[in-house]
Amino acid sequence: MLMGDILELNSIKEPDRLALVTEAGEFTFAQLHERARRLATAMAQLGAPRDRVAILSQNTVEYVDAYYGVPAAGMALVFLNYRLNPHELAWIIDNSQATILLVEHQFLQSMLDVRADFPTVKHIVVIGGPATGDDGTRSDLLAYDELVAAVDPPPELPRPSEDDVAWQLYTSGTTGRPKGAMLTHRSLITALLNAIIAYDVQREDRSLMCFPMCHVSGYLVTQHHMVGASVVLMRAYEPGLWFDLVDEHEITASGLAPTMMTVLLQHPGLHTHDLSTLRSIGYGAAAMPVEVLKAAIARFGPVVWSGFGMTELGGNVLMHPVSAHVRAVNGEEHLLASCGMPMPLAAAKVVDEEMNELPPGEIGEIVIKGEQLLVGYWDKPEATVEAFKGGWFHTGDLARRDEEGYFYIVDRMKDMIITGGENVYSREVEEILYAHPAVSEAAVIGIPDDTWGERVAAVVTLRAEAAVTDAEIIRFCRGQLAGFKTPRQVLFVDEIPKNVSGKVLKRELRDRFATS
Image 1 (cartoon, rainbow, N blue to C red):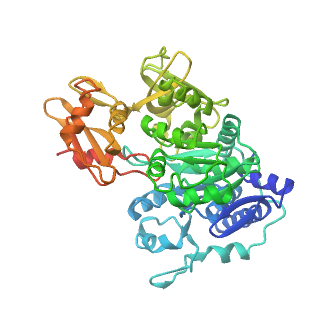
Image 2 (cartoon, rainbow, N blue to C red):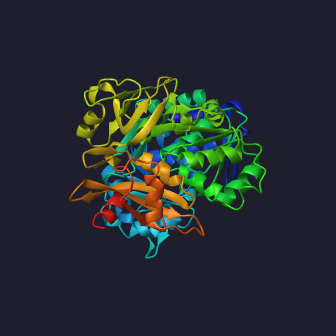
Image 3 (cartoon, rainbow, N blue to C red):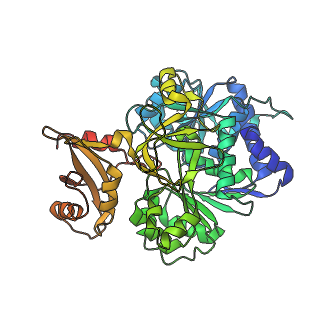
């Protein structure tokens, strides 16, 4: 099965069924399928099979077109994070050797300013605005609407192979230069089937998509489309609008990153909306602090579940169901810190450096096996070999497993702090910080120290109107943590840097405070 088949099959079965709601209007499955076919035809005329087509846009109907239409043309869609600097974006475009760039008009001029840095691009297709930059008409600019309106799709488009790359997503770059993870049609379809089975995705669902579509979590759109469910697309996440859309469209399902959930729970609209149609709120993309999770369950009820996944997996491979969260609320609080068990179409285990599986309770790296895995990193054969050492994919996440089979993320391997010869897992310290009533967000990093090698530092933002000293926070932590785990330094900031999915950019924090 191919990604484009998702729309085609639904357009045959129920052509008039609502598929998508956006700022630009509502679209049935038949309309969305026609849009994707037109884009596929246009891309095939501008490029060649296996070309890379990059896209830079917020959440729009054109992005949904590209999810399906670019792979249907036998090409790979390269996702660009609109929060990156234009020079960073140009690096990714150049690295991917993209021949076509789809760009929303609001980002056009910033990319034209660095146009010389991605010479492989032959055509720039402008979404939502005129195909002109500040310097007037350009020969390499095309208007999206005019381009797709002018083509005449054939009755049947040539079918690519299931093993052709459909999406190429670049890792978040939290530890260095991003790598291009290549996901095939087979990878993505397997990830979707895995999620549909595990999450009990229903045809009657109405899903509110508020993650940025340039993140792997965009697979939530295709997951709901696969079963014929409707998707309401937020252009960008706004907590007040999230509440409004849930009530207006009687939303049954939505997904949130921990930072998104934190903002919701602190929003004045938290208790002024009905929200009774919600039956499923998934969280992921980063670790959810237990205190935040308790507050979410208290407000939204027993509808919360989580998953563990990453870019290279095309979605989630571990699932922590609503039933486990209900158990946690009823006394088994340790389950709140779990990220779940392996989903039906994937396997996971915790191993040591020699790939020996570790017994319950011992900390090691999570490794994954399954057909939804990436086929490799673009133009990085050595990194691909290293990632699949021993025949399993190495996630770089440290975890333990309990006797029941639940997995618990302890830390990213690169985020573990070694101070005075002792290992400190930053997430453990962060959980304590989140329990402090004045703390809104927290990130724990290691800062170089001449005596200890690294010292534990807490970077925190405070809740509105809250006031607390660094000494008070350190004293609070010391009451619940071993001395070597207790932060020796508290750094107050207005905002903690994150990538587009809400994952904290600890590399930036380490660079920023390395000499403090």
